[in-house]
Image: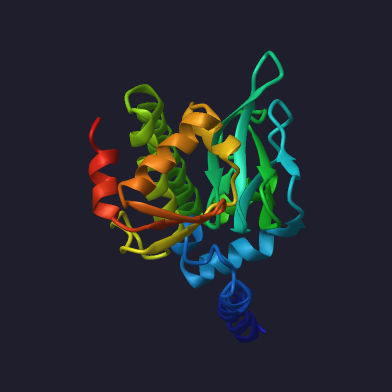
Length: 257
C-alpha cells in the first residue's frame, strides 16, 4: 500500500503539467501569445493561466471596465483594440491610452477602477477574477513578479505620455504616435524602427487621436497633411497610414527629448 501511494504521489505533478501543456496548446493561435505577459511565460505557466481564464468576445462600443466601479477583474486582450479613458467633471472624457493584443488591464492596486475601457472594434479577451489571481500567485509566485514587470512597463508608458503632452509640438506628437503604433503592430519590433513603407491600420477616429494627443481635430489633420506633403507618410484612407521615411519621423519625434 505504501509503495502504491508513492507511485501516485510521484505521478500527480506530471498530470498537472500535462494538463497545463494541453491548455497552453489552445493558446497557440491567440493574438496575445507572443505579446506582453503571455510572451514572458512558459507553456506550463500559460496553461495554468488559461485554465483560470473566462474567455469573452465583445462587440465594438462595449465598455467592459468602468471608472469608479469595484475592481473585481483583470483582463488580457487577445485580439482587437481598446480605448482607455477617464471621465471629466463636465461630462467629457479624456482618452489616456490604447490597448491591443497582449495588454493586461486592471492592474491598479485599488479597490475601484481608476479608468474606463471601451472596445474600438470586436475584441476577444481573457478575464480573471482578482480572487482567482491571488490563488494563482500562491501556487505560481513567478506570475506575480511578471505582472509587476507589466505594471512597471505601463508606468513608463504613462511617463512618456506626460512628455508627449507637456513638451512636444503638434507634429512631434503625431510622429511619436505613429512610431509607437507601428511598434505595437509589429510583433518583432522590440523598439526598432519600422521598415520603410510599413502600413499601419488605425481603428481610431481623428477625434480619438486629437483627444489622446491633446490637440484639436483641425491640428491633427493639418499635421498629417504636412507629413504627407514632406513625403514622410502616405494616407490611402482614413484608417491607414503608410510610413515612407521612418527615420525622418523618428528625428521629428525625438526633437523635444
